[in-house]
Length: 251
Image 1 (cartoon, rainbow, N blue to C red):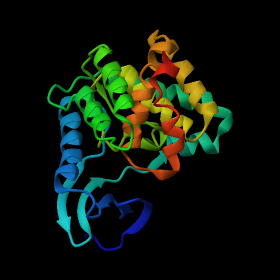
Image 2 (spheres, rainbow, N blue to C red):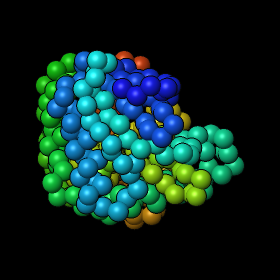
Image 3 (spheres, one colour):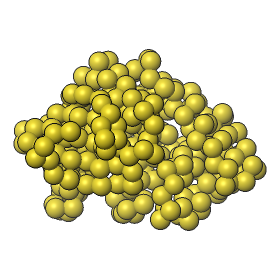
Image 4 (cartoon, rainbow, N blue to C red):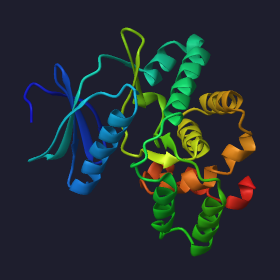
């Protein structure tokens, strides 16, 4: 582990540090080596198979603190910070955000995990949700169109860094997969809803207009992605997400 590092932020079971030119993400013992290596693999696959701007992965190693990923540091601000600092430019930043997501969806990475399989595994793992609800969610997932577009899986403004030249860099590819772009959009909408309904509605309207997608179609993914988000076991989100996994509500 490098010296002269400072904590940027902490999350349950992970801590992110910065040095002068590197970002170091350290995972505690809750994360298996397979999970950490999968995140590194996703980044390498996206980096090697697309022209998207992704900070270079420098190393993956096991340390006394836990497994860690070291990446090049990108100087700049996240789109989340810019949206909050300049609310008068929210629509402009939101359009930048949506356009970037559409650029991601335009890419294909044939060897990355399929989103359908990932979502099905997450649904089946929810043992504190009734078998009836799990069955309804799985049935809906099976009925949805099968695509192979690159999906970030956690695309939110905090995962986009804008550098001093205005170039956008996308970080945190742990949940990346290939699948249906509207499923990815539904997850982004849900993440916005957890923080700010105004931004969520602006995002959904802009995404649907730019892609000529019916909002009702994106809505059909909402119970599925809410179930996926439940597997992250964030207790403060549980009641909100449980209210979203009722399939009948989004028919």
